[in-house]
Image (tube, rainbow, N blue to C red):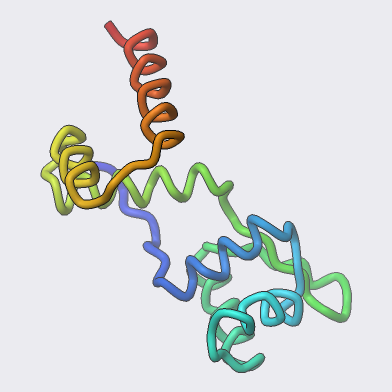
Length: 128
């Protein structure tokens, strides 16, 4: 079994998504983006980002007066680990069960079905 990464909470994922979209940013910049969606104070965002740094989810550049934060891992890396964790914990490692559950729980639009077909075709080419 793989070594589990620090699994981000929902709010931590919001901060990570914000930083993936913005690029390296200060607490104030992250707070401004999150303030539109959540009722979080500046100090709450600051504390969360400090905790995320301690957990290894964020890196902090403190060479300037306003510290600049960035995700410790690329978006794709983090999401892959989250999906792998969910796959193991909830579906016993069965990607088929994960996909069947996903497909039965929501309606896919035409574009999503086309993209899914493309990804399946691509996966067939990679693996016999």
